[in-house]
Image 1 (cartoon, helix red, strand yellow):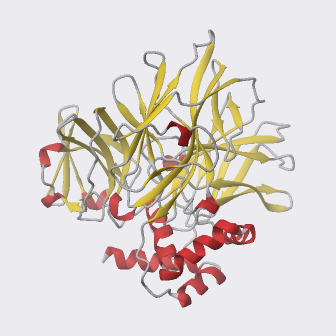
Image 2 (cartoon, rainbow, N blue to C red):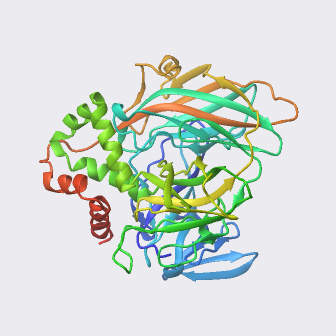
Image 3 (cartoon, one colour):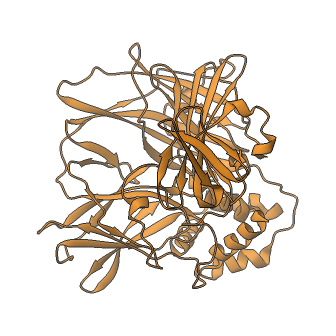
Length: 490
């Protein structure tokens, strides 16, 4: 693993009291205005080690990260670090904002705040955990115009009932206008000892005995098992660069144990569109210049245009990743991992038909283009589906930052939208919580629907040559990304 550029990855944002906007800027460590509020809490090394520092002990000096582990001094050169984990706390007039961010480092540079420069997708959703709002979901990423509006399903891991209600905070924190059509909660009570997760289309699946990976390597034979074994802070995110063989694709076989007689598998994936991949959505749309509104109109009004866009995306696998299963006849496409995020990777189930697989191993393969994917973990579950109870909740109240009632805009999938055109916009929602079911475990999902529009300059001439190459030549989009990545590093 080698990381060559500094990109902020937000992990958790907590908000107490009323919420004041987080202003994220592109700063290096020498220019952080309040260094006392920027606490380095740990690092992920290029070797795949997750190091958590003692509180208030981390800092960077002379190209070295310093900290303490159980009061003992710890040092590591930045050149050996993949990610620096930073906790940011800043005060405003109405509350305290806490931000935990991962900073992918570029050799000798640690940069704070690049997320504002590169992130270009979807609202943030925060769950009330009983004491504070915690960043918990990032819905409908990639839905960049109304014709691409889509439903999103996200587990709210931090949501807790208080006073008979579940409370959410919806915010816009990037330079775009977001249009949210629907916000509802699915309260799922399931047998104790099981977990539940959704597939791309909102179907619920129970997980009773997930099996971890037993082998994972990239195309060059490098060991990836530490990065993909479990959902943690080790995230495999190859930069948008050509590898030693001149390829921008990392062919990755993944091997799991398979019980005799298994014909169906539930592949559990924790993965997201990488932060650079999210940025490339904006860059590729921007190539259309002053013709972008005509393109939006075409996609909004034409199913054929949407089908063509999906076919291109499947071919390039930039924001949809094919899953191949090894069968006696060869590698057969059996599923698709949808993009999402990029800041918070969702858990998704990809159902797989494995009836043709022989032997005691399930071998699957993915082929992610470099720079577009952040892959955290893979597991597979062969258990039968269990019965669950689903209670769907509409919000009982919703108001914006000015106290205006926006409930009607969020109750149903219709022609009314709650629009957030600026980073000052936010909405507070409360849902009546149903009573707990004895003997059952509860998981709550957010079902949301919407789209967004990037704020782009629309007075430039379109780059027709580059657009034609990206759309018509397989692999040209990843090559365009690598060229922009190299330029951005410089």
